Length: 65
Image (cartoon, rainbow, N blue to C red; front, side, top):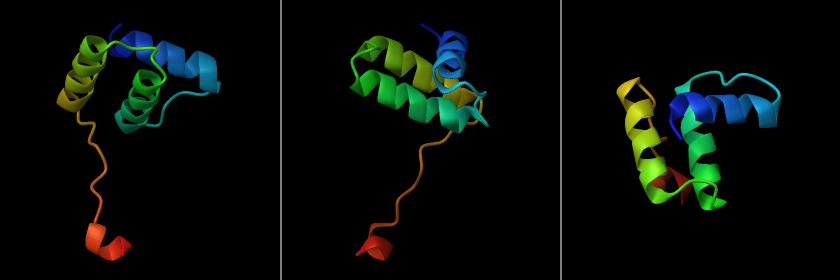
């Protein structure tokens, strides 16, 4: 599976288009956790999405405490 196929799955399941590639990155993570993607597929999709500007959220642990 590649990022385009993942986008099609996103649209089919959520019934709307992703706002940006960060949405797809989150969806890929959920899909991987559910066992719908292999680790190799997940890594390739993450790499592909990050090359187009997707970023994982940065958490400020000091602010959460």
